[in-house]
Image (cartoon, rainbow, N blue to C red; front, side):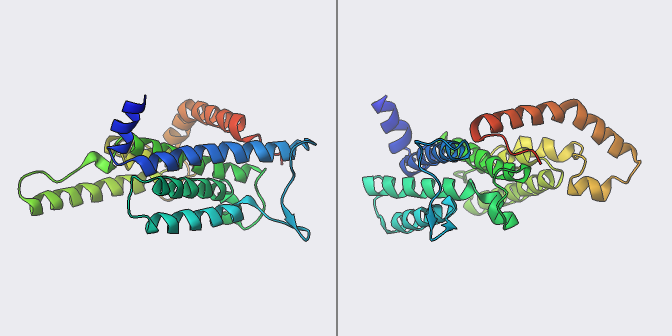
Length: 248
């Protein structure tokens, strides 16, 4: 196990990313456990942090951790040192605490236990997926300059990245967030998501699928046939890990 870690993580230059990823996941699970204990009013668990009657959200502590970890990481010269690992872990903890309340920042109101608060969990899942892919060695399009003409190689990579970015943006406009996010690393997924019909209610569908059109009818039928089951599974997993929102 130690030889695998040394070869696949340390020697590959992914020590900081590994520490960030582990700390990010651990901090998210811990804070979700904490807020669920507070929500259940468990007596033995510490309650919310309040200062003079002011409820201090955990995103505040997350910002502090992000600042310390980010600036500390910039100050460390040796990327394989223990200090580099600590700084990356602090950044991961801070980002988990902030993104766990992403919906609150977006709406500028406490929507943590509402349906709108699901957005925070969705963002955390996406960040975890991207970090996991990067830790496994995936890079956007997995492109690197060849040994031939460097200018031609870089122009080709730039063009490919631009095309992939276009497909990614189209996926997001079509309401396919996961296809867009994972498509940054795996271009084929972004291409498939960009070609297929948009989800009903997405910006793309509202602008390009008129009411009563055949495309809108096909999009609704496909959404009910496939995405409904995927959405149910996703919501079940979110509720299992993060807790079920209050019924509105």
